[in-house]
Amino acid sequence: MCRILVVEDNEGLRDLIRTLLSHQGYEVVEAANGVEAMMQLKIHERVDLVLSDIHMPDMDGIRLIEFLRLNYPTIPIVIASAYIYQIQDALKRGAIYHLIKPFSNQQLVDTIRSVMVG
Image 1 (cartoon, rainbow, N blue to C red):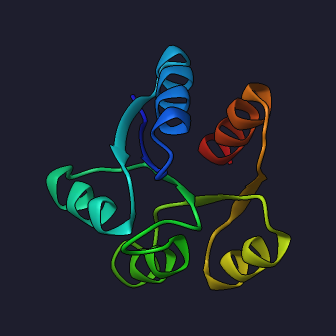
Image 2: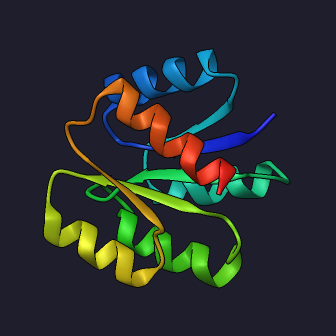
C-alpha cells in the first residue's frame, strides 16, 4: 500500500483529502505544516509521496521542498496552491507535479495516480 504524507494547514481540506485518498486505497499520514511533516517523516520509515500546500504557518511548503530534496531526494512531491507564482517557485525547487486550488476530487486522484505510476 502506498503511503502519502498530506501537508495542509486547513483541517477541513486535509480531512477531505485523507478520506478521498483512503477510499482509493492509499495510506495517509497527515501534517498541518512543514515542521509536523518533518516529524512524520522521522516516525514513518517509508513515505511514497508528499502532497503539500505552500502557504502554511511555522514552515511553508517551499522550505519543506528544500528540506525534502536535501534529505529525501527520491520522494515525489506534489504541490498545491491557488497562486501560479508559488507553483512555479515550487517546481523550480523540486516539486514534480502541481494542483491549482481549488481542485476537484478527480483532479486529485488523477494526479496522485500519475505520480505513483510514472
